Amino acid sequence: MEKILYAKPVIDSEVEKLTKKCSELKSSGKVATLKVILVGQDQGSVIYTNNKKKFCDKIGADCEIIKLSEDISEKDFLAKVNEVNTNDQVHGVLIQLPLPKHLSHIDTTNLVNPAKDVDGFHSSNIACLFRGGKGLDNLTPCTPKGILTMCNYYGIDLEGQHVVIIGRSLIVGKPLALLLGNHNATVTQAHSKTKNLKELTKSADIIITACGTPKKFNSQYFRDDQSQIVFDVGISRLPEGGIAGDCDFHQIKDQLKAITPVPRGVGPMTIFSVAQNLLQAQENSL
Image 1 (cartoon, rainbow, N blue to C red):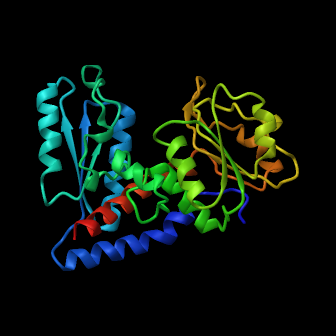
Image 2: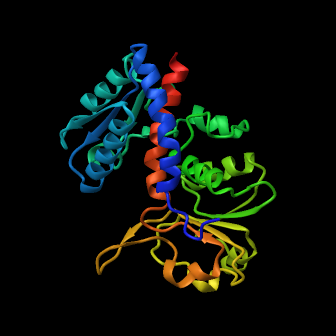
């Protein structure tokens, strides 16, 4: 196994399959179509949505970023969502977060048609995980799905492994715990109130950090026998510039069996999973 688990070789190995699937559907006159709703000009959101469009373009799918004014009314925003929800030519819909303050009260989790929910957040899609869904053939939350894809590529067998997930968000922690449990891992979910966290992480075979605290996890949290694997989901901007994950990468990498870097680790897998979900949604529609 590679010591550093980069996303690029994983994506390179799979992108041909997605491109071929897009091409086959195009030849029958059906183009995979994604609509991304972007309200305002939040810098991070603009970059993220543009990256999604670039990846869709790369595999031959159609992606339109619907740019809405920062001060759009709630009525007009909901009307636009309804418009793409009910358009039979649209296979995937994604609402980019965060929304402006005057729209932030809207629970977008179930706002998107579940059949077009390429984020995988709709309660109907989460229910697939509760029923034992394996993730790759469902509209599964993108970061958990990306981690599973990395495990498959790098030959990380989850069965019987003790996995500690630090974080319990609806986006990563909770659906990831369900997904890995469905692959026969023994999952412990930790969070900010967990006691004896260092003892817990040291007992794990695989640790997944998703708490958004830069460089929180140093050498004291891990064994030094090169037997553990770490997936670092966190990404934070540092006051001095640059970005960092939840783990102190350079301090801990030599004591681990393998670790994902930040950047170029789990992050790109999330965008890749959006494309996977888009083609899955199109297949389902047929």
